[in-house]
Image (cartoon, rainbow, N blue to C red; front, side, top):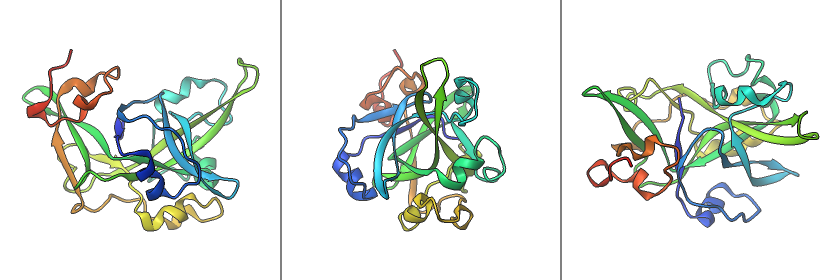
Length: 226
């Protein structure tokens, strides 16, 4: 799964990598958590744009927002058939920029967090889906949300967690974003082993209230959880 990630890359570098037109003022995020707003790239008016959506997808047909906390991830193996994701998979796909994500493994009876990303620490993109839901109790206010696709982990990451987010290579960005393209033509398997890296971090990342550089510090340099 993917339940926490980071985006510390400078906004201009993100814009150049994902080639969107607008210039948002993005805050550095070390510990993005479900139900929080986070940036996604999608097609708007025929071009790429970055927008802030809430993490935890609410289908357009949902009666309330209670589903969101359970919809932070969508399994790539079944996303085309699941009623909650089927429509968005067909037409409302997005890229979720990140430069690391977290997984936990039990070591010596305790949950040890790892930060996982690319060698060199560069930004990359998760495969995402987005939806717009109208809140009947808020005067028809539209709430836009997203989910991150997951797949079976590659051999490097499998000892940490059996699943990983789907990472979309740059060569497939355009096809994934194109609402008229066939999404089943885009490979949604595990990202290759060689470009990826990981390291242990401290338990400060466990608490969603913590969103600072200490969350991504290697374990030896990480402060204790407050």
